[in-house]
Every structure is written in C-alpha cells, then in structure tokens.
Length: 375
Ligand code: SF4
Ligand code: SF4
Ligand code: SF4
Image (cartoon, rainbow, N blue to C red; front, side):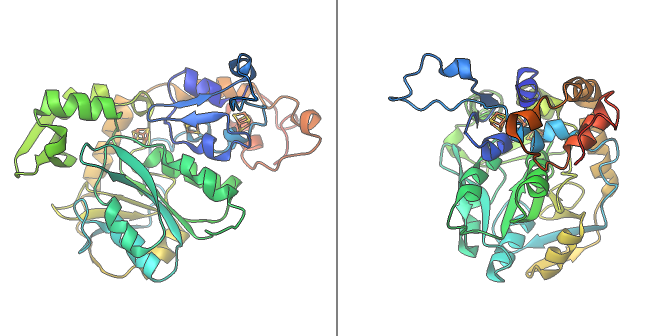
C-alpha cells in the first residue's frame, strides 16, 4: 500500500493530482477534494472485459511526487528568496497580472512551449486547459478559488509519445508548485519553470459557488466577475460593479480538508512566487527563489517593476496560516516513512532511482543510514 493512502485517509491530501500524473497504471484519480486510489479489491466485482478498473500495483512511484510526503518548508518560507519586487503589466488579469505577462512574454520568445491554466464559464465551473501560445494566456486570467487538480494534467504530457512539449511552465498554488518541483526532480526535466501563487485556502465548487456566494455574499454566481481575498475579507464583485464582502473567518471553515493542514503560504518550492499581497492595488508581489527563476524573470518583457513591497505583511500572513493550520505533520511523516519501502528490489528486480527515498526514510524514521537504501 503506497503512503499516499495515508495522505488521503488522514484527510491531508491537497488533491494536487501529481499521483494521478505519475502512476503507471492510472490507479489514483484526483477530484477537487482529494485523490482516490483504487486497490485490487475495488476491482474484484468489475467485469474487466466490459469496464476498465486500474488498480494499484504497489510501485510506489506516487510517493516521490506527493507534496505532503515531502514535508512542508518549515517556519521560514523566505529563506530562499533572492529578489523581491512589485510588478504589474498591461495584460488583463487579476490585479497586476504579472503571472499572465510572464507566460505571454516567454511564449513570445519561445522560451516555453506549454503551460496549464484554468478557465471558467459563467457559472464559475472551472476547467484545466493547455496553453500553447501567447494568445491562450488571456483566457486563463484571474484567480479562481475553486480548486482544480492541475498536476493531473501532466499525465498526458509525460505519456505523449510524440514528445511534443519539452519546455513546460507550471503555474500553481503552493501544493501544486511543490508537486511540480518533485516531478521535475524525480520524473521529467521538461518542466522548465515553476510559477507558484500565494494561497491561504481554496474551496470545492459546491462550497464556493453554491454556498458562499449565494448564502454568505448574497450574489447570484452568474453575476460575479471577480473574487478576491483582501484586508481580512472575502470580496466578490458583480457585473454591475457592486462589491460585497464577508469576513474571511466566516468562509475559511468551508475550505477543503487539505487546505486546513497546509503549511505553505508563498510557494516555497517555486522558481518564482507571485501574489497580490504586500503591494498596492493593481500590483503583484514577485519573489524570485532560484537560478532558473532569475534567468527567466530577466527575460520577461512588458513588466513595470518597483521595490515597493511590504515583505513584513507577507511574513505576517504566512505566520497566520502556519498558526491556523498547525498540526503535528512531523509525527505523521515519522509514522508513514517508518513503514519504509518494503521489498522493492525483490519485487521489481531492479533499483528505481528515486532521489528522495533514502533522504526521507532517514529524516523521518528511526531506520539507520546503513539499513536505508542508497539514492
Ligand atoms: S504505488 Fe504505483 S501503482 Fe500504486 S497508486 Fe502509486 S504510482 Fe500507482
Ligand atoms: S497530495 Fe497530491 S500527490 Fe499526494 S495523495 Fe493527494 S493528490 Fe496525490
Ligand atoms: S491552501 Fe492552497 S496550497 Fe494549500 S492545499 Fe489548499 S490550495 Fe493547496
């Protein structure tokens, strides 16, 4: 049984979709709330001549890309930040639209050949779409707080025999950018750039669009043109320009289970983190964290940049998220990693070169370095 079973059963799954992307047989499927993993017994009553039922074969690949099983960044989410800027662009999008401008500019320069974005219809039903050119970017602008398992979309890309896409940019909230980092380290170096968003929480469609918006905000979902979190409030703007607000503490309990256990606010694993916090209206904060992030950010055209960022505000909100969501994840990690990685070599007859295995077993379990497998 892979350790992601514990992630799901203990309600800490973020539904990032990375396990669905990597699984060789297609046993996990992620929806807005969590992954669901099929085991052999789940398929015992299925006539496999009539219906597909892929079940887990205990290869453990999913353990290498699950952000929960990799652990959280710790108290200091800013230890790898090397450049801090406020930015804005002319491309339409939420606030400064820096994320859209980065993608647009890199598409135009042929630095990336695909990225995933989220579109919505009038009812705010969301869909993950593959962007392959600069003109696709505008369709995905604006933040949607109903969650989508974006990383699951990598399943088709990494299995595409024509190898059509080789310069992939990932845009995601902290759990997704963390999963993207693990996929890059363990599976494919075709992921070239990881753009991580600042994220306090997200919601299922039912909770956001069929409860919060009609019942707490008092708007018809089809009249809403923008949603945002600002100054302690959840804010929805209507087509007529009406702005309605509700205190965050009234909507936060309706966030997804995984979000209540999430201890990453600023996308610590991203190359570049982006958000609308700590800057003036119409501006985004930009935190560059890696060499790769710096390289690509320096290529981006069409951005106006200043140093006017209130980093203390970002740090304060990070602390609030850590405090609100505090749980003993180290106990969880010790427990699940202590299970080890049973009989891998005996089962497969070869060593799978997962890089994090020995590191995590040693970090979170009592297994001695001698017993742990070498990476
Ligand atoms: S252990 Fe392997 S087969 Fe099972 S869910 Fe994970 S990736 Fe799929
Ligand atoms: S957090 Fe992501 S990778 Fe881990 S079990 Fe959930 S969907 Fe799968
Ligand atoms: S709070 Fe944001 S980053 Fe954390 S699990 Fe929820 S959506 Fe993912």
